[in-house]
Image 1 (tube, helix red, strand yellow):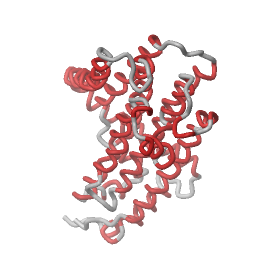
Image 2: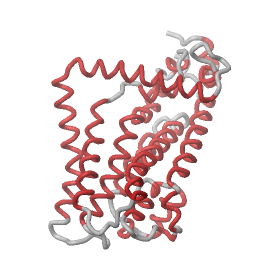
Image 3: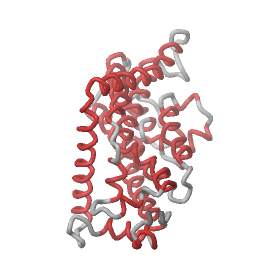
Image 4: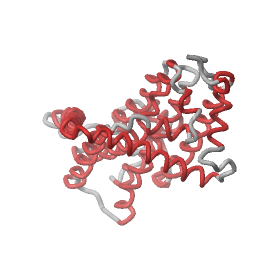
Length: 301
């Protein structure tokens, strides 16, 4: 069946128009559009959650399986410290702290934004057009589409390790500022990971099979940040500090909390720059998404 003519001629233009005028408010301000997008995201996610909870036993089994599978990542670290006392000069509690902060941040981003990585498949099979003809923000539809509540297992696993690391962590001179840094780095880390997921999704408008490229920065970045920067080559550390700022997810603020020097020659005040880095990443990801939407052309079928 042929697509609607408007979408067939210019899917990008239709998508841009839909992003600017939806819910009957064509001239809504940026804040109003953001609120409407969040509301649409919540409604769509709630619909999929209700669908998931129809089979509660199946959901419980899936959630526990997801939690167990992700826990085996940390088992590797436990086994490693069964044979060594330190890793790159970091004690077990410090490595657990790095693991917990990045895993919690990534788990939060994956739960909320993980579905955007499937844009390429939607573009390939032509079903992305259905998002463009609805009076709902396209990004909200993409992010909430088939909301996977089972991903809560990854978030819970990271959070459990983070709480445990705070119990076993030794030698940290806790202050109010350092205590506040822990939830802050989780939230800003989730924003940075979410921005990378969005940028990777935008890239798939041009390279429909580019999901694995995006995953190398998100899933790969999560694995990288679970370990101390001292065990990696200097070029790699500088790359995730100055090029793709993954280090601001946890390395930079976490090393401040642990009383260690910032990586790659950063000044001490860089530990407080994570919110600014996250804001820049969000802005750039939003720009890339808009450019991707405008460049999109329907499959015509």
